[in-house]
Length: 243
Image (cartoon, rainbow, N blue to C red; front, side, top):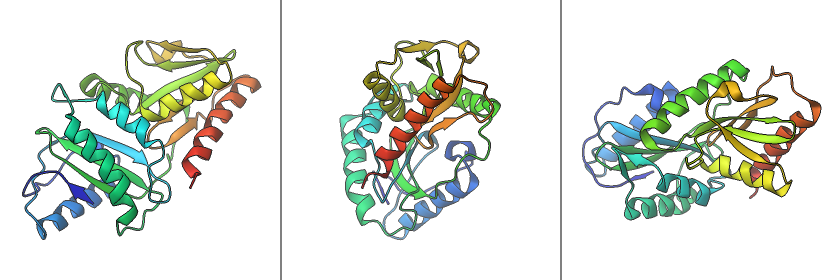
């Protein structure tokens, strides 16, 4: 799609930053194509944001940009110019881009020097949605938050009518989590935060900027609490599918 400053692209070995090998290859192909047009350098990735798309747009873009403004790269917040570049190129370049993954995943990659690029990959649903798998994903996201300040995925649960996120009280939530928090407020559902996953009870689910709301498929929860999680998932899908 597009990039900020730079010249030749080195091979990237951080597959875990991209989620899967296909996304990494798509990104490397993008960088290779840039070399035919202009010299483009991106160093080791320091931050990879993965935002779900719909019809060549990114729903909740303003929420994602607000969360991006709270993220750190090498201990420093992103510049106003970088945030403006990200928002403008998502709004303009996605609609005009020649790619097939119209409902795919936008990847914003920022390197250790503050340079950035965007590319689009196919969306792949989670193969394992067990409570164990969701807990593992949230643990990986928590490690990312330790470095960047914002977790792209959060473990959450509804128990006895109360919503709880696994996140520090003063941490900025990712874009999708702010939507779920707002949906809870519309139903007067209390929202709390807990320090460790083991404190969560009830209907367990993952909140993700890439995957949305993913209920654990093996939790034993009260029917009313499971219905609340379904309400969150439905609200997210309605917003994402809005044209």
